[in-house]
Length: 401
Image (tube, rainbow, N blue to C red):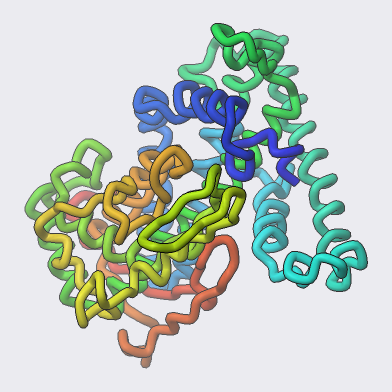
């Protein structure tokens, strides 16, 4: 599924992984590249707010889970593929099935002699979806190659991720090292799969969970709206340049990721040598799972109100999201931490800030905040099992067309 571990997520640590990560960090996820796509994110969030404003004028109840998912999907499509989602590829549905199969309970993983029997049919489904994914990526890459041959890429304000990766094909990943790894078509597809699967679900899940908690806690919602009104005013939307000034928004996002980490279990780690940690002997090649969900709800770490949504616990600002503080690890830590953390956080904060700043939100008739369904849907990501519905009321002074 991961093209013979040619991507980043499931590749064993070593020279190849280091060079692939360096390539992705420098060519795709560096601050300048993230900044280059800021106008794109601004445009998509603007279209998103306009669509919600129309729903507000019509007095409609909005499926926020679907709407937010669509926003993140459009941003991802344009950044990675250079196009809006036109259903030509049906990539989202295919990736969602891939993520489901990757996170599904497989008895063969725990009783190895049953693995060849494929009693649950998971291996058969994975082979089928792998073939579908590969065909979709071939279409996407082929389309970009045609555009490149016609010279249209040079006319763009910036290249999308596929353009950048294709420009590196047949080039050494580490030209200054005697261990030469050449960038091939398979590498491009593996990296694309990592990027798209990592983006589609994670940002949308984080936004929906945070909105759900804000609707359940009107006090926190009011406090956040007051901060936004004070910093931004009531005559414009929130811009990315405003985000560093929004301290309470940062606390709200941290608290949401503490209670609802997008990945309840980090990608499995493996010990590279025999080691003793806090009196525990960990043999070499041991597979280690880090339960971020349990860490975030540990009363020994977070005090007695551990189950309460209370952003003020981060008021001193000493705990960050970069993996420096082991009590909060939504993006992992160290060399295997999520390389797209900054991009993901920017998308989450920008979308969330505008949802809260531009609209007041009411629950559907008869539903009280405490009655909101908080059931989790377990998988590689921990999404909300029941979609979030709410009715928006536009609250800014300006009139978006």
